[in-house]
Amino acid sequence: MSTRRRHTTLMLALMALAALYAGWFINDRHWLATQLVFTVPPLALAIALRLGWHKAAFWSGVLALAWFSHGVMSAWTHPGTRMLALLEVGLALLVILCVSLPGLRARFARRRH
Image 1 (cartoon, rainbow, N blue to C red):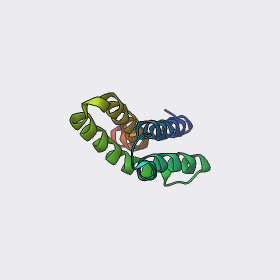
Image 2: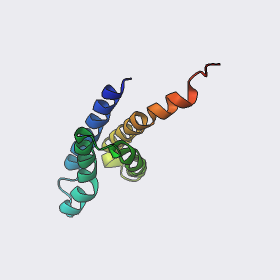
Image 3: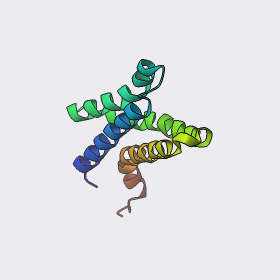
Image 4: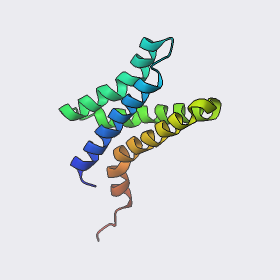
């Protein structure tokens, strides 16, 4: 996957996470807090990635670990929102894959002698 395609996929995954959180917590009694904690970070990182901030991908990967953990916890403890939680897990894994792909390729590339 080329760098441009990877960044596009990462940006779309971050925007999908933001949309997921915006819809998931729309009726929460602490709406503003949940939007600031869950919706704003992936949206801000997608914008930062689009604007060319070179650390946006790194921070996306770091936060994706928390999003993954939240999704697993929610899937186990809240059966009513299990599908949303599993979607969150899948999107978090996509973010982690997009961020980690260059390092994985470098690590497992054949070495020339």
